Length: 76
View 1 (cartoon, helix red, strand yellow):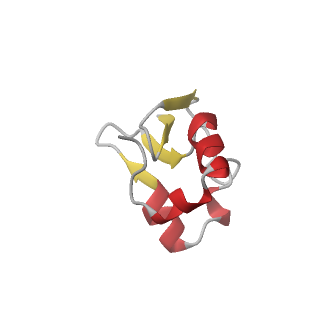
View 2: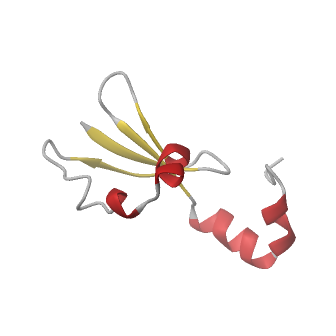
């Protein structure tokens, strides 16, 4: 099982954890609400977990342009 992190805005692969016995609690997923978990975490057919996060570039863009938070997508 791998845990794959992707940017929710641009799709950039942020990182990957390849550990057989990775604890989802150790990764902090237990701290997410049910709605946050449904929005951010998906499971692939092969057992991988895909996590939507934000890359440094998109975070910087949002910090410089706070009105972009209103948009569904600001990457064109």
